[in-house]
Amino acid sequence: MKVTSVCILVAVLLCSATVADAIVYCYASTCERCKSIGAKYCGYGSIRTKGVSCDGQTAIRSCTDCKARFGRCVQTGITECYL
Image (cartoon, rainbow, N blue to C red; front, side):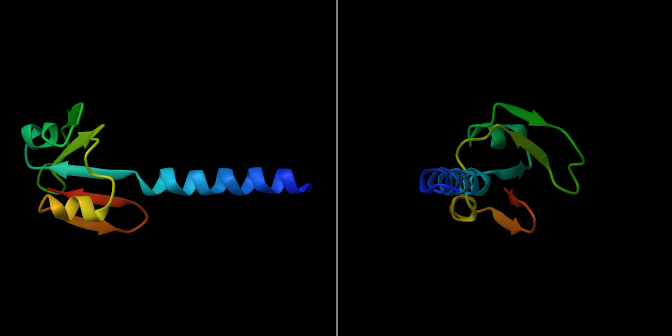
């Protein structure tokens, strides 16, 4: 591979990792709570297990953001924030 190709490949991998780290699935007790973190929609699922899903939220991008809003953060294969 040429040096240029290697540099482009490394840049794509780094950008992909950054975007993947920014995805946090958030759940709240109410739709109003979801709207307070910028959610566009509220998905109603099994409220007893996870709560209302905050679809399209923009405020929480990491566990640090979640904890700053007094949430509980769980990191397994994905990052989830429970508000």
